[in-house]
Image (tube, rainbow, N blue to C red):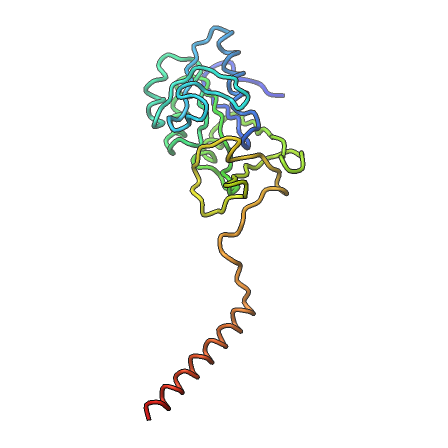
Length: 224
């Protein structure tokens, strides 16, 4: 059973794959704080303008007013007297977001963060591992795998309907047209270069050496 602090600040993180309901959960918690007549400030990264330039908007259309910022330091400067600070899509912020969250919590504020925990390559996303480590509460949500309908914990990036190569840049803002949730088994990450077969490579190398040597013999004979 979770026991919330009765004094001081803290950090709570809602994480998971895309389409797992992170933003909806963030907004649910912030709205409850507003109902309790607490002062709430909400922030989102400037580059996330998929659904709206300023509001935080979930994939199902639920929204809440927010302030788009370019760097994490702006959050610290603009939070003001807010008792509760909400941060959406934290994975898009710089590494300083960890220190910002800590300083807000140390100042007695409740900090609620929604973020992807892994990128499309299934690797920890930017500053998120450190953010999870310093948080008092972490909830990892699951989506529904679009292949097998099982619990999805991964984000599949698609380009032209096909799984993206790991050579693609990590940050690419998109929604249903570019991403879908998948489970561990159904997630695909094509190998960027063909795997090396050592036996075949040795044979190819030997044949190449023989061809080169034969060429040198011909050149020698022709020069005589």
